[in-house]
Length: 114
Image (cartoon, rainbow, N blue to C red; front, side, top):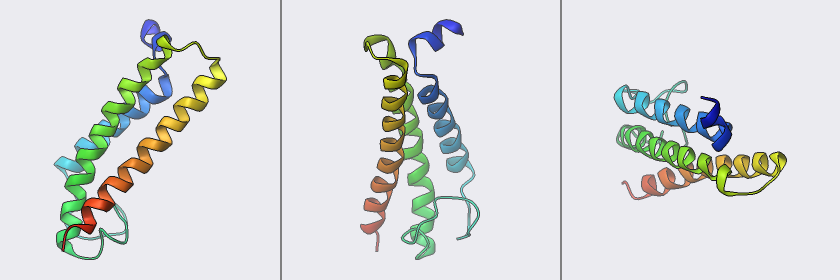
């Protein structure tokens, strides 16, 4: 375990695993009805039941994919010669970019549904 933490960015690795687990849970157990508690909840996804159903499955898939990207990018640490602070900043930037990408991708797909 120590070896894995030495060659990865632990923050990206753990958040990537969380994204995959949450994506699987949302894909297997998507919320059936529009609600304010659980699921991919944006104004676009809550406009109709059809958009809601699509958004739940699609966002779960994209979340799992982003989790894989985060895990893969966690291994960049061994190939870059950066300080710990620089690794943390880069890791945080990758994390934020992944979360924003998730929203942008799903919202674009929701706009195509009528």
